[in-house]
Amino acid sequence: MTAFFTLPSLPFADDSLAPVISANTMGFHYGKHHKAYVDNLNKLAVGTEYAECALEEIARKTAGHPDKAGLFNNAAQAWNHAFFWESLLPGGGGKPSGKMAELIDRDLGGYDKFKADFLNAGLTQFGSGWAWLVSQNGKLAILKTPNAETPLTGPAKPLLTIDVWEHAYYLDYQNRRADFLSAVIDKLLNWDKALERLNA
Ligand code: MN
Image (cartoon, rainbow, N blue to C red; front, side, top):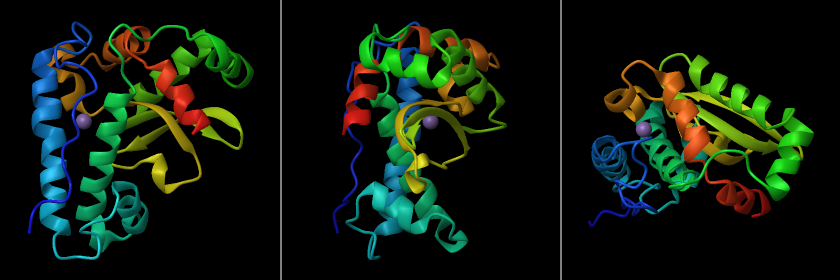
């Protein structure tokens, strides 16, 4: 049986996020870590009812079932990583304009407070996990999740994410997770994609 799940192409060249995220980090993070989640999912899903499901569907169906932890972790991580790459844009980041700026002012206390709170969500996620900008109950909100956990399994609609697993930043920033988060927020967030996801 051929593998159903495939590693999606990056939406940018692997050296185009430098110096915020180096090509070296991308080589490991995308080429090794993200690929391994996809490869493991193919091994785990083959011959099961999940063999040709969307990643979102597998994550939702297996969440909270300890006997399905392998399927959940690899499907959710495959989805989270594809979503993360699409959350980044070379030359992006900084204060958005238009609708996203209005919503950040309305719901999150303005851009400076958004940046501080989003950074803090990633910084205070103990161990591995993710920081998220989401839309929930008609408002923007900031969440953090541990390990492979994802807003996909709850009511919030994810708009942007930053990976705070050590493999996301250690080659470039060592233990300075806050510096990594600050640089990604200032220079890489894809605000057009956030608005597109909000309106989808
Ligand atoms: Mn990662």
